[in-house]
Length: 116
Image (tube, rainbow, N blue to C red):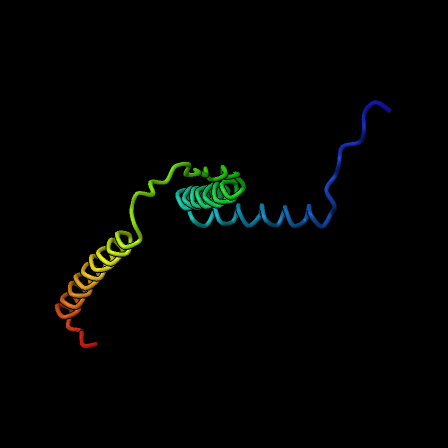
């Protein structure tokens, strides 16, 4: 047999599709012509955003590039490294204290208690 019989949907599915079609027609008849257009646009935009999120989650990300350090300048002594670390720590603490001060002022402007 060269031609096969066309596939027919089961009766239950055809009934549900016809009921859905009747609902869509009733919606169009009862709500004018602009609301169905807005509904279709809303569904299309929502479906588009969901499909973009779905397909973008499937994109394989490239592996991170690893750079190996081949030459480290070892001219500093341990004492120099420790003094540099202490200096950096003091700078960090000063920045953190300045940030805390600004947040306290902001809280004071908003009327919050800023006592520790």
